[in-house]
Each structure stands twice: as C-alpha cells, then as structure tokens.
Image (cartoon, rainbow, N blue to C red; front, side, top):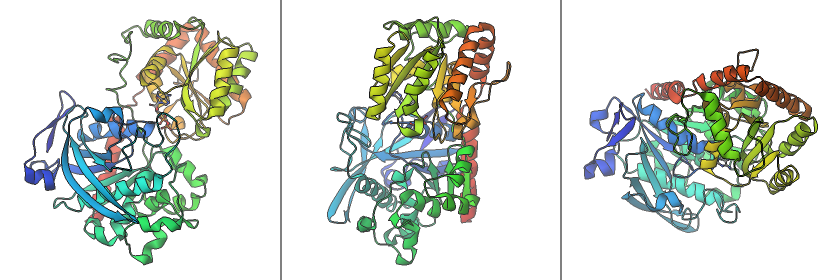
Length: 514
Ligand code: ADP
C-alpha cells in the first residue's frame, strides 16, 4: 500500500505483509476509496525512454495520485543501465508455453520511493534482456522478434494478475505493444477471471500498429473462436485495432488527433468512426517537476525573474564551442528523424531560410533516418556559423536546448500530442509549428501581443520559411519578444487538468461495469 504525501509530492511506500505482497499489492483495504489502476507500457521515464510515451507513463501516475488513483506501472525489465543498480524485490515466478517455446518470467517490484508511483518490471530471459527498448543500442538495428516479445510480456502480466484475489479496478494499456491485453482479457479462456476488469487503451502514436500475420496466432493463448474477428484488420492480426475494438474506452493524447484519426489513420478510419462513442482525446500535460527551469539540474543557469537573461545565458553556454553568434535568433529542432516529425524537410527549410537572407541560426538534436542524418550533417558543414547539429540522443542537451533557444521548429506531418512544444514554452522558447494534432491544441497563434507561437497550415517550404522570417522579425523587436515569451511561459501545460479527465474515464468504465 502507499500514501501520497501532498507536501513532497512523493508516494510513501509501506511494507506489504507477505499476504498483501502476493495478493493485495499496492493498495489495500485502508485505501478502499482509491482506485487501483495498472499501467502497461513498453517505456516509462526515467527507466527507459525513446519518446513521449515514456514521459507520459512516468508522469501521469504522479498526478493521478492527487486524484485518488493509485497507479502501478508494469514494464519489461530491459538490460539497460537504469535497471542495473535499482533495488528490485522478486514478487512472483511463472511460466507458460508460447507456441514452441516455454517462457519463464519473474515479476519484480521496485523498492524505492522516488518515482512517485509503484513500478513492477517483468524479467523475461531471452526476450527483454537486451540493451535497448526496440532496437540494439549499439547498432541501432531493430529487434526482429517484436511480436514474440510483446506477446510474451502481455501474457506474463496477465498470468501474474490472474493469481490475485483482489483485482485492479482498471487495466490501462498504452500503445500497440500492449494492444492484445483487452482481447485476451475478454476472450482467452485462461484469463476468464479478468473479464470483468474494465480496460482503457491509450494511443500515443497510431502510425505503429504492431501488425502481424495470422500464421503467428499460435502465440496467443486459446480463445473463443467466434471472436477471432476481434483480432483482425484487413486480413492480419492488428493489436492496435484489436484494442480499439475490445477496450472499454479508447483515448488519444489530444482531441484534434482523435478527430484526425477518423479522417486519416492508415486504413483504420472506419474503425475510429465506428468506435467514436467510446473514444476521447485528452491532451497530454508535462511533468513540471522534471521540466522546471527554476530548478532543472541539467542547467548551469536557472530561471529567475529575468527571463531575457536566463535565455541569453543558456544560449551563450549552448553555443560556446561553436561558431554560431548568440546575438542572433536561435531556432531548434529536437526529435526523431522520422517522416512523422518532418525531419526530412529540415534541409530544405533551413537552406530556404538562409538563402532568403534570414539571419536566424539553427540547432538540431536528433537521430534516426540515415539520409536525414547525412543531410543535416552536410548542412552544418556547409554553414558552420549558422547550423549546429548533434546527431545523438542526449537528455541533458535537450534540456539545454529548450533553455537556450529562442524558437522550437516542429514541421510534423503527424503529431498525436507533441511534448517538445510544451517543454519549450515552459523554458521561454516559442514554438513554430504545423497546425495539426496536439500542436493545434496546445499552441495559440501569435496575433499582435497575444498568442504563444507561430502556426503554419500545410507543409510547403515557402510557408514555413515565411514563419521563420516572422519569428526572426519578432526576435529583433525585443520588447514584443519579451511579451510573447511571457505568454508562453505562463501557459499552464501541467498534468493537473488532464489527470482529472483520465479520472473521469476510469469512473465511466467502472460505472459501465455496475
Ligand atoms: P515522440 O513522437 O517521439 O514520442 P514527443 O514530442 O511526444 O514525440 O516526445 C519526444 C520526447 O523525446 C521529448 O521529451 C523530447 O525532448 C525527447 N527527444 C527526442 N529526441 C531526442 C534526442 N535526440 N535527445 C534527447 N531527447 C530527445
């Protein structure tokens, strides 16, 4: 069981009795008014992160605790640095036949308080004892057995919960990696006991659906054959589509993205329209404890009353070892070099801006598509006094860039929510964004002295360059720049609001059960 400490914002852990440890878990009789919710996710900050999924799963539980929801996060135990020196307490050992192999697993509970929520990891030798979440950290090559890994984790989790007497109130699965959970709870014979537990499915990124061929159906435990269609989409097993069909409620990470999926979702449009009654978009928040410019341990220069000097001091530090002039506007891009993020457009946008005579400089932090990486590298070599490229994943540097840049550029083709623009605003960095998805919902277009960012509709190079030129003009009007920066910093992007909406969703599914 645990108690939330309002003063410190931390969860105070208490020892479970062995009986509670095996059966009752983190919330017991004394917490009976509180909801017990399990989060299932492939990522969770700070344990393992490749993007926004980790940030959300590592933050939302802390804010749900303030809404009387006890969350326990379940994730795979990777062989990554964070996991090595943490105190994990073994809770349960089990095994099952999965096709032709026997899967052994061990569930372990993290025995520290700092996270602000409970965490369980599932150790599955041969499947997750690797140095990356989806790809080998040293080669960048994706693991080829995603289907077997995901299914083994989901089955291990369900087998574990199947042994409990006091079941969770809600099981909340995140993204396609956990997409077969609602189906297995509803239709697999061995998990019959879990059928009454309401399930919620959150889509952080619909572009990844985890699709696989029917010839692997033997990996799923035996199920009611009449419901086989609940796994299927367009002749394949589609875990994301299956969750949309089988979960009691479906959420996306922004309201606009929910609407966009009904019009364009890689062939799932009909499904999203059909299931719209049970679906809802809830805009992500940001973890204002981790992303706090006043106390950010990654920064040498912390924010105080003078926003202008905070920005300049951090910009000078950021550009110290480069040839970029800190007195010019600095426009940043941080993110995966993937089509969704529009990273392939950077080359043309930056060349276009420089050729148009715009004085702004550019800093880029990212990895991914090798073609984009070489394009960005080429640009930084061609314009060493205008473009600085860091082709790496670096959490500290990302904080320094949010603090030291004047603008963050997001030419995303798809943006389910986007967190960068929210982190940026909190650090006084003004977004320049494509007006879609979560960017549409979280950035207010600049009109005179109102607004928090520049928005463009459509991804034509010239339109984006026009906004960059406007942003540079704003930079040269320091008085107005200060007003817009203030607007951005003052915008409330905290989880408080959104956590209440998730609480509503949990209350709704529990009411459906009654
Ligand atoms: P995604 O679609 O990648 O999940 P989000 O905007 O939701 O996009 O979240 C991106 C998160 O990943 C942010 O916290 C951002 O700062 C971080 N990030 C992306 N690329 C890098 C990088 N190369 N180095 C450090 N942090 C990064």
